[in-house]
Image: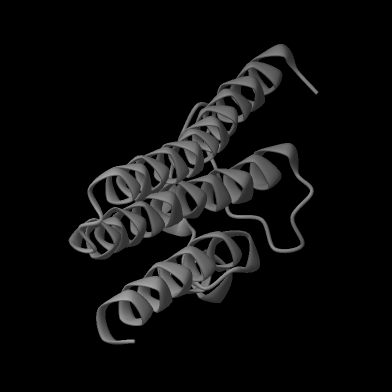
Amino acid sequence: MDEKKLKHLEFIQNIITRMNTNSFQIKGLAITIVSALLAVYASSKNIDFIALAIFPSIVFWFLDTYYLWQERKFRGLYNDVAGVSKKPNEIKLFEMRLDLYKGKKYSYFNVFISKTIWTIYLPIIILLLGAFVYLKYL
């Protein structure tokens, strides 16, 4: 493998690492904001803060999905440049053609419902919704 191709792979790997870091930080931020809103509820006993915590959870779910979606596309690009894909796309040196990565594996919806995403956000939303309904109506 020549030096230019290795440099191209290094650029792609750096982007994948950044996307992964962003996704990790979004999960932490989501939990922090939800916890802060629950702490405000605990001190004020205003259940609207529980309902309010649902909104950032949904927003962070979509945002985290976006970063994982981009990461998957860059992983596809990396595999094509490295030559390990079963059906590689033709990628020119230092080209970052994410538009080539479409279909089931690279669809936003599939990432949205992937195990690494929904297992974090859906339980938070269900628990918040359950707590809100319980405190408001029971």
